[in-house]
Length: 186
Image (cartoon, rainbow, N blue to C red; front, side, top):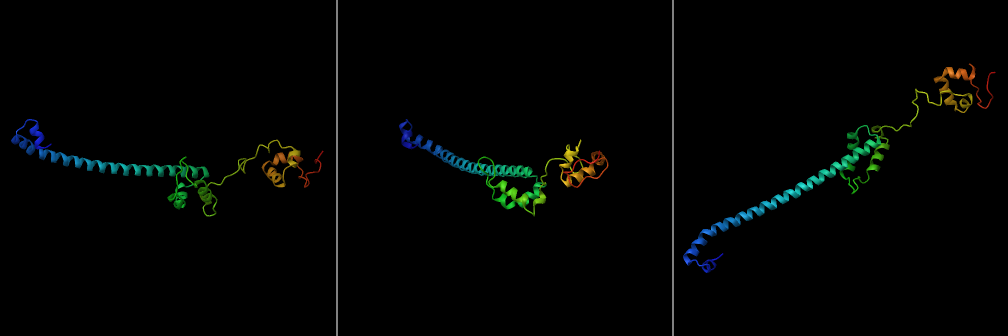
């Protein structure tokens, strides 16, 4: 806004100058406030971008930690803290893939679980079946034919775990060394 425009609106030169004298400081103050608001807006946008990046990094870290915990659990790790400490180099470089998995994680866990120095951190996988102190269902109701098909070690175990059945099979006589012989007793 200038003096000529004010005079074109019907103000006298003195009235136009008075309006400018009053309005100019307000315009300057308004311009300063606008500039301050613009600066504040830029600062807030920068903070928001920084917070978004921090949140994204934290989320990435949580996803990696969860994937590592799941892999360690599946591998039977006894102590996730100890296993993760040994995987620190890998975890520092871990790359989260789009599908949520961690690049190279299965190999890293397998290496840790199978290494002679660190295998003790993992539960040893055991075959399912009878526990050593328990008999298996195949021992119950043993026939002489089935007994003869057992290996010498299995025969010895059966005789130790089932002395009465063993005696009944052979009517108290010793087991023949050659399992191809005919039945003992009459």
